[in-house]
Image (cartoon, rainbow, N blue to C red; front, side):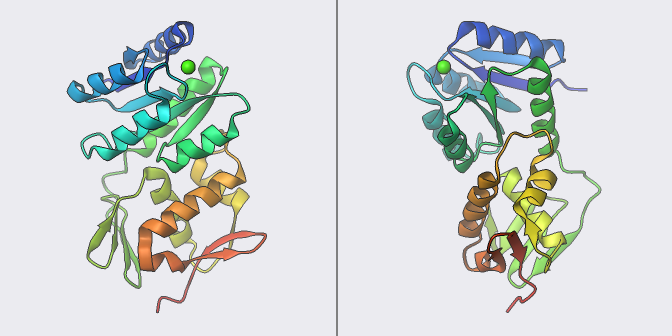
Length: 230
Ligand code: CA
């Protein structure tokens, strides 16, 4: 089996080495950079499966690096896990809004690190045999190919947004609480808060355009995908 290639972008040398050591021990191939420019340079020539990106970097900050990655179609689908400092909740929200898959709060245990990496890498690999297509009004979700269309236009979603939409779609007409969505879409081990759900719903609605209205807010409870498709 091919080794997954992970890029670490972290200027604190000790943390960078610690992550590298643990990932290599877990069987991953690791590339590392201590700044944003170096990371972008590596990405220009290497095919990477996952990026672990520190927010506070000496040159270009992690958010800017993330934006640059998401702008390039060749790189945009590479999942990103942000490394954030404890207490910086705003960083985590901004990170997720920029399309990151997850974040890890420093300091973290090696076990937590590997768990997050495995979860994120697994998300990116839809099961081949799944070929089902679900449709509501103009919204069409091709589950097997991980593609979403509104009318004839394809909508680019992050894998997290895709999972969120799929979960709502499969339970169409039923209210899903934020906690339930957190558990089912983000996995139990994630340290995310219910506000994360709101943030992702907001992005998802915007991307779905006219079909965004299908996602209804149920005040004080959560969200529901409308049964009314007209
Ligand atoms: Ca740093």
